[in-house]
Length: 368
Image (cartoon, rainbow, N blue to C red; front, side, top):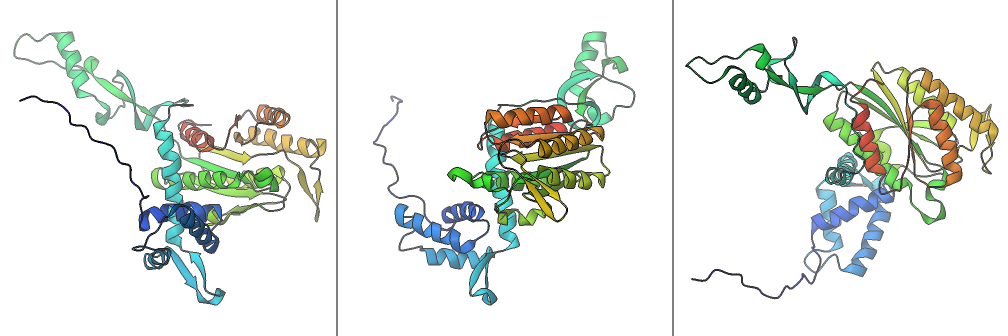
């Protein structure tokens, strides 16, 4: 009997997938963009339904809203005119969704994978093998390689098998230290200027990093602060609601708060990640503000550079993620980075998550 293949015409699906799960994925994206405004997110979802036919006669938008309430994703607050609010379950779901979106892409990509491990008594195995040393644990000994060495070194003649210390090979471990990280997010007006939404990718990266730390590195500390005219700390649960304000960029206030938080952490590794798209333009002076959005103001810049130097003296490196490619601003970032001896990345919005994740994983493997 002849063996072969049978071909037929490919008929694509006429309609997109319908039901709760497909709508829920869109809803989670929209509620992040709308900073937790359920009503606005549902309005956008209705518009998308009209344009792309996301629902049908069997499952409509009303069914979806009922399911959101039944499953505990939204709560109707009677005291606020029947407005819907997202629940803690949804807040966690948004963080997990951000982690899957960003970390999923990271695992598939090999770009920018810079490793600088400090080897020794650690708790994460590497791919490197070496000879046995006094103090190595039994779990590190690689039996297959060690037995092979014994056969090569002592031969296979006779009934006695000989395995000596010199035959043993162990798998090297990478040292991982507890790390304290402060993530600074710029919420000045420029983060939504010129029609480009820069704050939503920044929020997603922050939520994904927070969820990664919680799941994989529970002993690490991650504090999140935002800075505009002033700087203040926010809780991880507040990230979905984060919005840009009519603010200038007070980088000095952000750095001062970040360093205050890190001084309280008793960990060997301390670092600051700063996500911004602009230059520092503001300082707090008494009860008022000194502002200058035109060019790089010498007074503002000098105070910012002084803080970069102060962080360097206490061994706190600052990694700046500059989500703009303006050569004029890059010059300032280069000077800031040189003073601090930190690092700087000039990234598009799509590459931001990759850079933050890779840098976090790399830095926690060495004592800074």
